Length: 201
Length: 325
Image (tube, rainbow over all chains, first blue to last red):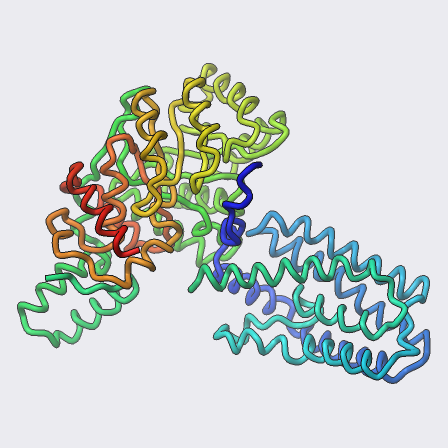
């Protein structure tokens, strides 16, 4: 293909903001009240990651994270998002792969301890997780979307990706490879949000 | 006097306000109704007039000059309300005399949504089904076509196009074989947004195509130079996609007033102005704007009625919009 330069972000968006919002709202309604449960578990995990030195406690955190990635892969990407976006089938594989990687590194091998850690790393990682858990669901409201379309940790991709980046920041010995998929799908999510917003303007 | 500029949503809102409240003097009210009617009223009288048609050069079968695209607009997944809305758009489209609906396996759930509209409205007899094959390697083409026709609920397609020229050499062999066997009526290729025109030209010169699909709009007129003249020379029908550039063109134009002389061309909105420009090119067989709204589909079909601009008027339309955009 010699004319990739001629493609714009909108050339790859198969659906409208309205359709995506409707899909998210319908998904949120179907899984309610899983969202507050997952956010609460996320907050507990954050406290554990910041305060506990126990490797066993760290395992529970990565079990939650790995499970969240696998849930988003199946429940959101494969069962819902793929109905309007064939790319979601590939995203489901990526999310499942990341979930398995987190479970392998954090639970099976127990190689993702949260200590020892510098104060700066604590502040940065903790801040990122807090944004993902508490602020991200409000972003949509700020952009004029209804509460029913709020995106929360463990249920939808973006806050799950951001929270994972925060937890990996809190784990000083985390392998850099564990960042590849979150950074890639995070950039993709950002591009999609930007493209949808531009198309709807 | 220039007609005030407004986007479609504004026009609809204004028309409701004007109609219900009757706040304007009689003359102004009549003027406003003239401008607003095409987008405002459900059973538009414009829809009663059959749209103008143009023949497919390879068969002389005629097609209405305005069809219906489905990119983004019909990809609504399993949202029942949105699916019914799309079915309503299709019903209004057929009711206004439309025939050609275009889709692709690339467009998410659009094929299923079209199939739903065709089933629930018993419109199979009216539709001119235009779809695409979009897969590589081309050996997977027949299975994809089978799946597409199942989603549409049609026994065979009227037209199949090689989407974005993907593996066109192998796909065209299969499509021509299907046509020879009576399992397909027309064969074509598609591109969009001006891509790969040199290769498209080569295919048009070397293959017995019935159709090509290209991007053509009031602002994006790249096909006028070589592709459209070649289509006329080779007797190939032309489907013009993205006549509104996915709404970008109309959003840009809406910032400016529609010129008063647009009324001479029987255009009551920028949408009709842009569409009349595209379908008035003698090489264009059908333009395929996409929409999710019944009033818009009626307005689009209405652009294919009445008078079409001649060469001088077309030049004026292009020059005027070039100055604005």
